[in-house]
Image (cartoon, rainbow, N blue to C red; front, side, top):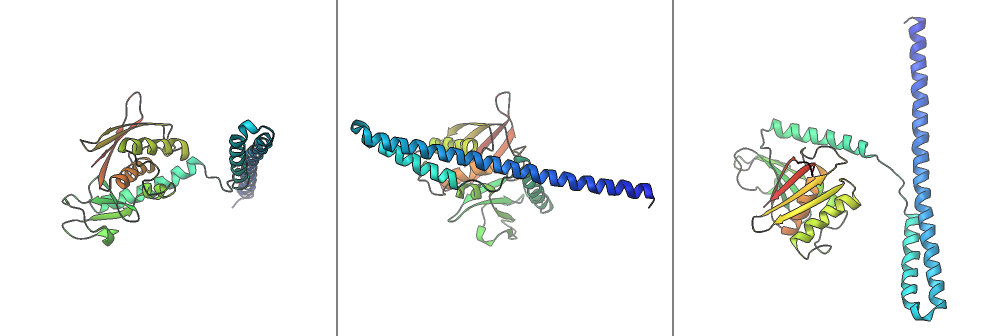
Length: 266
């Protein structure tokens, strides 16, 4: 290697080291800033709670209400102050990780000559994703997975991405068991408000026709028509868990009002 080439390589390595150090510094500052914001919010809530309690002691007419508000404020403030996030993963990093997994799963399905059909099946402990071959008509014993080799029901069985997300909010029906419409609307709200995976969701339910349609605006994890995408997977897992029966999912591009249209059929 010439002296000039050696010098260029040394300069490039030094520059890479400087960029890596700068990246670590920016990540640290971002984390510190976010934690500080959480702690300021927590301190503010605690202060408001204490003021409400003091007000309750001073004003007997509204004492009960102020004591309750004060207790809620102090409790919420303590949680916000101490339970700050320690690790931050950007949407871009999460989307890249998902893309790799989705690509691998799709390649496996292609190699096994399976249908482009995703069937979400509720179980005792999880919602499973079954991808059948071209001749399979009935669901197999999913506990025999992940690779089902029975000639009549060949396919693969995986734990649905949506099943894992569903566990973070509770897999029973107590949080929205009043109706199928409520269940669907709540699932959409969670995608927007809690997981922040999409910008907006609108839903339309046809219980007699066994169909639920979701119009999606925006997506933090890219195109929704990929293998077991978190957004349609979560909606499908949530509905399958509520209905206690399998359903299939179809995802197509939307129109002027919606970026994507997800249809769950049972």
